[in-house]
Image (tube, rainbow, N blue to C red; front, top):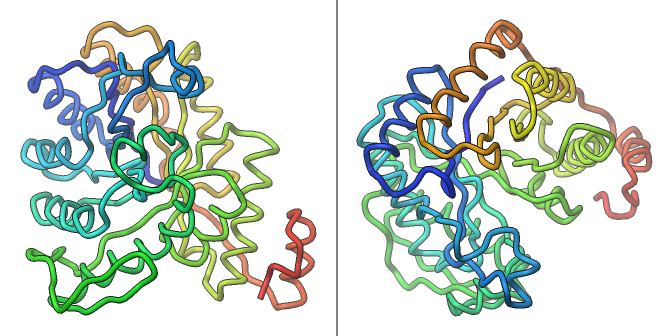
Length: 320
């Protein structure tokens, strides 16, 4: 079990010293990773799309790749996790280049979380197609992995073309872990086939347990071991005690999560130091309970897979 913390991007402010202090405090407290959210544009709260969007133009959002370039210089150990980059609204080759640069600058500490995102107005502003984002993201994953692995390539996809070219520098290990975020069945199936992990934003309970069951069925249907696909859950502290957060952590450990991240935004904090104090309190409360925590995985035969698919609410006809 790896325990991380969410960077309080909309509440930390713009002082580089505060950003540095939070990142270093998280590393010193023993957190394994730092999670950064991604929104390029915020909507006017008075507009139609602003009323639907969770984050508005008044919410500050530090761009994750630039942020992690800074954090890489002021930390030495903590993993940097984009949770998530809205990948289809970005140019694929440029995103691959930026991710590779963070990998190099951080000493291979980047874990790239991606998702399709819910905001059509962001896609419009960035000149990308909102309607086919789910289809394009799979080709983006394929192209990025080839760009990270091959010094030169020629690529002809449905949406992307590269002619005898490549990025430089390449990631230190010629690969970067890709995690997928979202809760739709299509996301779970895509994660199972193509990704290294799933970033789950569902609260503990029946919905989360059902989603994990579906993910595991899809992983096995893809011919992969269930242990090859990690699960990260998020634990908000707003209105809750450290003890209640620990209870959630224990639920996720039992459910099979491999990673957790602790989220301090929307808790009423007004100063960066309050976020720093909160993450310290959480780690002190949690540490005695997670030492040595493990996750058990199981596999099964094709007939058992069909049975498990039905019990998870998946049409067995969708399982190859």
